[in-house]
Amino acid sequence: MAEYEMVIGLEVHCELSTKSKIFCGCSTKFGGAPNTHVCEICSGMPGTLPTLNKSVVEFAVKAGTALNCEITRKNKFDRKNYFYPDLPKAYQVSQLYLPICRNGKVEIKTSEGTKYIGIHEIHMEEDAGKLVHDPYTEKTLVDYNRCGVPLIEIVSEPDFRSAEEVIAYLEKLRDTLQYLGVSDCKMQEGSMRADVNLSVRPVGQKEFGTRTEMKNIASLKAIARAIEYERDRQIDLIEDGGKVTQETRRWDDEKEMTYTMRSKENAQDYKYFPEPDLMPIVISEEYLEQVKANMPELADKKKERYMNELGLPEYDSDIITGSVALVKIFEKTAEICGNPKDASNWILTDLLKIANDSGKPVEDLDFRIESVGEVIKLVNDGKINRKTGKQVLSKVVEENVIPEEYVVKNGLAQVSDLSSIEPIIKDVLAANEKAVGEYLAGNEKNFQFLIGQSMRSLKGKADPQAVRTVLQKLLDEMR
Image (cartoon, rainbow, N blue to C red):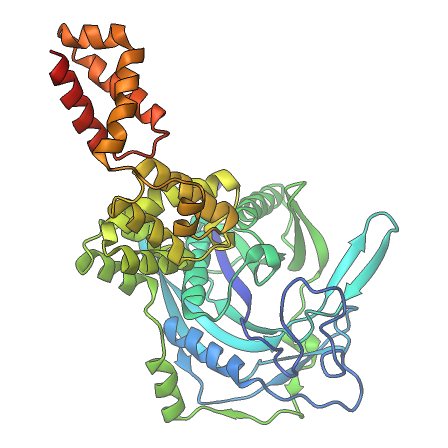
């Protein structure tokens, strides 16, 4: 069998985090009852006129700048004409001829090293609705809430040669757009979706093979599996003497296979023409500089700062900067407790374990981000011990309690008063005469046992150092 290599290009659709749609004032909030975020404009009623949401342009320029693109100073919208039940206007407003961003690049890192992936263009467009297939009635319903939700489509060059490179690129895009606040990129909600264009060719051949397109794959694991399956399918087809057909295919995640949807369309099939109801967009130098001045610190720069200025190890910095949610929690926690390394330790060791045990990603946890720093401060100030701190942090994540209020309400404050500890430890010694006798006879290990019994009697609320001091004093008096 000949050796083959894959050639892959991606079209990534990202819903923008604007409050209203691209051409009307309807809400973009996810999860509304079907057909409740719809008006005359986004449902395509005759005689209505669109008005461009200026935040969409700003978000597109931010994304293009962060992804090293050239910003097209004079760009415009075009109509992409096709009929489908989830598109009530029978056309989609997009950008074919003058997209807002072009000629960018993204640096990715894989097991093979560092590589740059070219970005052909980024264009703005409106999303279509959503078809819902009811298996019980065998009917298809349509929800138009998503119609008109603003998108940017990021079109790569065909620079990928492995599934690993594709996943690294998608993770880099996701992180960048989340840092910018441009998109939440929640693939499970459809706000980031990828179309995978894939072909194979014998190693050493310059010409591309015939490509297929796998539409709207909405998880990184599914994308990796779909790539491996389609690669093997095409190679097997060629080796058996067949030919790959240019077509659009759907990935079935349950069956782990692709199947034909339709023959692949070309641009002329959509009969693009300039959108007559929207004026061209002119981006001035002043506007571009204003947007650039408001760009946030991105992951690579933030990681470098954490290591150089805050003294965090590279491992800690890598994990924290890999999640915008973790960054927000870390920075607020470090500010409150005054110790970046302490904040990192609690977050990476305790908070992430609590999140994992809950089965939720950190992004979906719902609690005051100030609470983590407040828990650490209670421990560092000696008001509660480390064990109690972990218990309080769990309650913070599970029930969004206020740490200090929870400690007071549940009587968890650490006891440091030696005079109040001593009577309880005397009772412990009286109840463990054998262990005390063995300790006094030279068995030092029993000291730790007696500390444990004392902490248990004090219900874990005592300062461990105070317990140790009192216990040693009482044992010395018994010698």
